[in-house]
Length: 244
Length: 244
DNA sequence: GCCGGGGTTTGACCACGGTCAAAACCGCGC
DNA sequence: GCGCGGTTTTGACCGTGGTCAAACCCCGGC
Image 1 (spheres, rainbow over the protein chains, first blue to last red):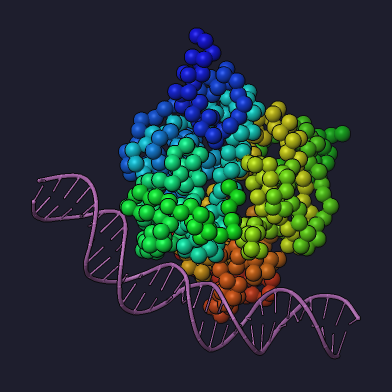
Image 2 (image 1 turned 45 degrees about the vertical axis):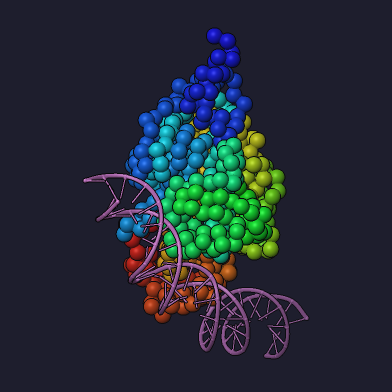
């Protein structure tokens, strides 16, 4: 087996994906990668609406999105829902469960999706012998924290319109990093999900999409959103609060 | 030197404080503690208003509050400020800087305070030989993330009054964990800070304090807040969203 | 094709909380 | 003590965005 075929093998592999999909950009040798792969497990695809883990359940593993997309949310005692985030390929999920051994939120698929599972017990063993991995894990979690804070700024005192503009822009940026066309978004979540995520009413989201469409900034058709004037979108976002 | 005197020495020491003040509750031997202490450095007290680190500056260390209190915030390009959090003794600060080598926010003292510094480079060395420490670090950061998300739920679609009630209750709980009287709060931050933290106008915060006072729930006098009816405070918070 | 239902859009109305302004309060220095 | 400046409180008004409700649209099933 040549080193090249080793690499090919890794590329098809979930552990490699977890590391490589730009969220754990760490210099590990092929050997180390193979060790890590032992901890990763591909999972069956999830259908739309299926949950990956749910609020309160015992923590056991982290998950990396491989294809499709998911949402995470918490449910209040009166059935009220707050969307915490949307997760695209390469995103890591379940980090919140580390603290107290229980997942603090639920993760559900927005469309048919596949994820891979990194059992934490195994991850811990492996990382004991891979100091670089440990550092990268810290960096990833810290990054999630910073993104959360940045979202908090948005929810603080920003106008509804600006919130939506930021949302679209951030999705566009994430598309870019996935080498997808950053001007042609397909948003698999409902208006209600978007509204909850942004702290707005779903009608407001709908109205604002309409407004941005008549302004010639977007072309909106249900789940599909085209960005026609990126410059004017940036204007709407205004002086950036964005640090993530 | 007896083991006891070792422990006493540690107790006076900053590294010990960092670990022990209930945020890194890890089973480390006395030896290991001493190793860790080498990385911790006490710092000069900060005066009210002084900054510990500021947004955009190069990341170098984590900090643990020893006495007093601080706030963290981000500043937008137009001078608008968003408070991210308030930090009491035992709290760890600067985690956000791990991701991209720069602090994403500013930390400033709300009153005369002391902190200790954990230089990250040294912390990394030490943790390479202390796997338990590594795990605890992850747990601490994960905890910060969960708290951030919980705050996000509050900012999502909760009534102004409920936000303030939650704020007071959470402060009370933190007091309890510090073995302070949880019914007698002294809030060193300004109304404006509280308002920004909760996504409200400072007038609204003032009005709501007044309202809760006439309702007989609180006794408010500038920075000092007495909780008279904890039960009714909990009522205001309603079905708990709180998971942190 | 037709019907049914969930998601989405649009409209009319209204309330919560924001904004602007002034007064009151408090601490602090002289 | 007195007066000043910053913070907090209180008041009056108003606007953004939430709520309620109806129409609409698109997709799937029969």
